[in-house]
Image 1 (cartoon, rainbow, N blue to C red):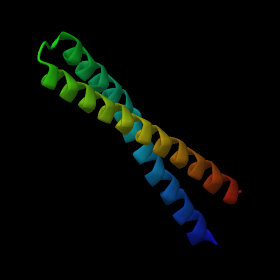
Image 2 (image 1 turned 90 degrees about the vertical axis):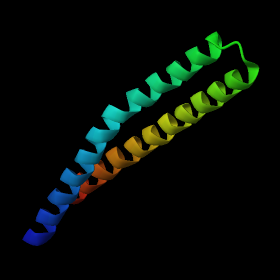
Image 3 (image 1 turned 45 degrees about the vertical axis):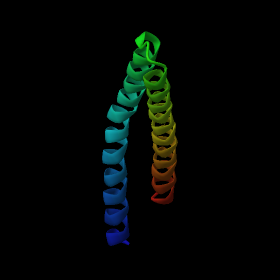
Image 4 (image 1 turned 90 degrees about the horizontal axis):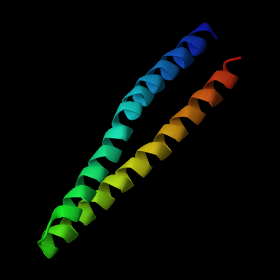
Length: 85
């Protein structure tokens, strides 16, 4: 039983570290999205503009995926904490 509690605590700490990384990365994805959107606005070449918009949308997609993963990990931690009680 003691080992299970220790393993549970270690798993929670591991997940919390990943959450810390996600909290740092998510705003960077948003900033990168805005950067490419701005490039698209000020680019006169139509092909380059389309490319910047495509890359911007990819960054937004990355942000959405990271936010979903963050939420999933937060829920997993809550579940683990309630299991350990």
